Image (cartoon, rainbow, N blue to C red):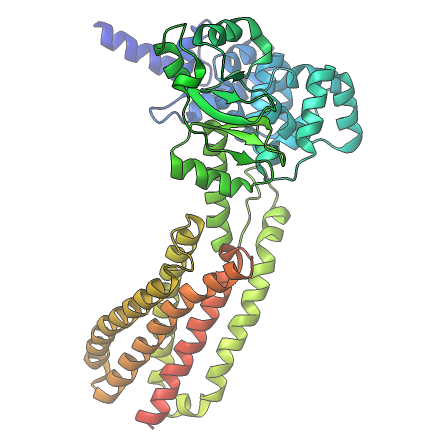
Length: 481
């Protein structure tokens, strides 16, 4: 047997639910993750099997082979009983990292199973921003117990972070930061890094240069620091710095990082003093969360989580469905006005949903582009008129093309030139209104400081349904009857 065949045979054996013990951690990690770094279902089954058999040693071996991010992912595939069995398999550092990576829905449940003392020890392993994020999910009594069990310095940092409003830079930042006066040399700064130890953040990319009042006046990348000679002063190598205020919304922070291609940025208070930093790993999460939030909002739903019950999911979706029912009923009332015309020409009942449906799809296309442009700051008052005119023109062009296609299809089925004209004109009108509402509705909501992604789809769907029925049936009454 060749070496390659032996490797394949061994891997095949390991994929069974009752894989032999004794694999090396790196072998287990390879087995656990696919080429896309997603957890393999077979590995999840192995964890479940070990838990069912009460094999704590095997469970510890399986979970111990994973990184904390993968353990957090694994938790999402398990029910509450299995998650409770995994918690004792984690040391304080791993538990802390897993808690910081868990979805909020799961984290709240897991926190209930960890004692305040164990949780305090775990949180002391995290940077202040991640620790505060976890503490924020604790209920009042348990939060007080956990904070009381923590080191005084760590407790103060968390309490100060929680004092800032949610979804702001103050909540997002970590208080640990590397700062130095401009008269320091590169050698002094490097020596400080080596001796400061735990007082410095676990991950940092820049040295922030501060004046005597602790206000940032520049920054020097670690790569610059390592290239310069020890005698070089920080003032010689520092560059301009992009400051983030503590009250800046996290979405604006993400936009700033993306626009200026930042890896990290200092956070300042109202007096301009350095109080912390935000790093790119935090921003990746923010951008992903904001993107997911907008996508879900466009569909009128919220993320109930992988472990949510039927009622939780239904409750998250029902309100907008109720509102949509009311707007749909209002749009359908147009049909009642023209029921006599429909009774005379049954063909109208066959074709009118086509006009409304095509208008709805066109409105959704325009709406999605508009919401994305507003979120990325590509659409504002300076170019709004030009974008509106462009979308109106697109609506007319698409309406004209679809009018020709539907006109030809209608003639092929019904052999009525005037009916072809009616549906063609109705499509031009409705796609024009779809484009207009798709751009104006989110712009208007944004102007009113409302999230365009949340309620725009309801209004746009109402406009396209209403105008679809009204234009088609109204034109039919004028042209055909």
